[in-house]
Length: 222
Ligand SMILES: *Cc1c(COP(=O)(O)O)cnc(C)c1O
Image 1: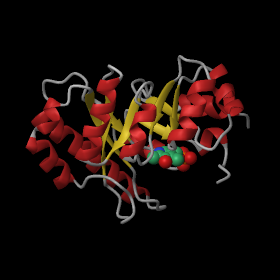
Image 2 (image 1 turned 135 degrees about the horizontal axis):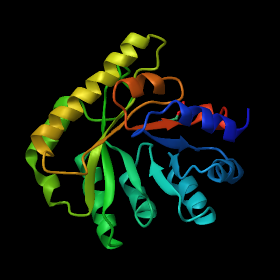
Image 3 (image 1 turned 60 degrees about the horizontal axis):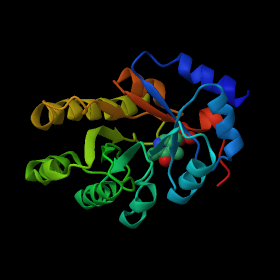
Image 4 (image 1 turned 120 degrees about the horizontal axis):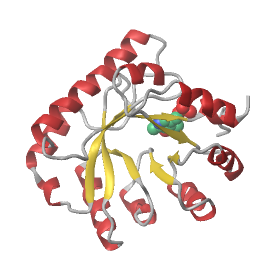
């Protein structure tokens, strides 16, 4: 199947209000151009240099979402153009994004990455670490970042019930912190969850942004 056909199929399964981040990491510009020609405008990347090269050479109305683990020393390269950073996993990183965004006079939408999987290796705040970070209140002074929701990855297993439980736990946590810290923010509304193998479950559990790569672009050659 072509990229355009894959894209149409994924889009046809998304209810209104759920947006698609087409994860194009490791795929060449031609692949993104094919999706772009079919109307896709949100692309997700997980390497700073690769995303910046694509940003510089592809149409300027693309929204670039950074979905990977972000090191503080790389923030400056994307601050001028990134549309959303999905994986804020420390307060230190949020402070750095604020600093670099301020230098280029931007406000960058950011999601808090929450660790919902059973695997040890995934990045992100635990529920408690996230509550503690929000309790300290320092984030309220960071005027150049806009906390816009949460992001999470389920355990990579075949057990649909487990995956669904993990996605539902993220939705419940989202509602809790929305009520406790963001009740007056119109911007805190995104739940970024769901990848190629589990996005239908994520949508059922209330995802607003699915991050789908291989189902659209085919397998990646790492
Ligand atoms: C690569 C990646 C995806 C997309 O994965 P697929 O299985 O190819 O859909 C989604 N989210 C994150 C954080 C990723 O790194």
